[in-house]
Amino acid sequence: MLVRPFQANDAVAVVTLWERVGLLRSWNNPYRDIQRKLAIQPEGFLIGVLDGQVVATVMAGYDGHRGWINYLAIAPEYQRAGYGREMMHQAEEWLLKLGCPKINLQIRRDNLDAIAFYEAIGFTEDAVVSVGKRLISDR
Image (tube, rainbow, N blue to C red; front, side):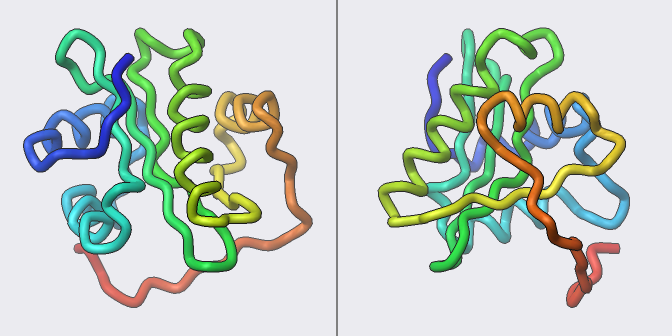
């Protein structure tokens, strides 16, 4: 798998992948999420390509205190083949170069496969409560 930065012509393939793996939610416009990422640290938006097809994504960002991971997605037919680990490795390497000391991410409680994946690559549950407040509606 070739891992490279997102390119503008990847957008439809990326959103299609996110839809296939169940990452999309009605309150988030994925195209707006892409545009927001391209405005801030676009080099942290990585794409995995096999045979010319987008099969993996990850968005990494660093706010000067913590790194964050969003939109890790692997096409269903390529899951459990090491591609998720490779995408996370690439994201972690990029964050390390920025001096990032710790990565945070959020997983929906019912996504047991994702929880198991992150635990297998060294993540542990933090004793925190995740809260959020929407400032801009995507609807």
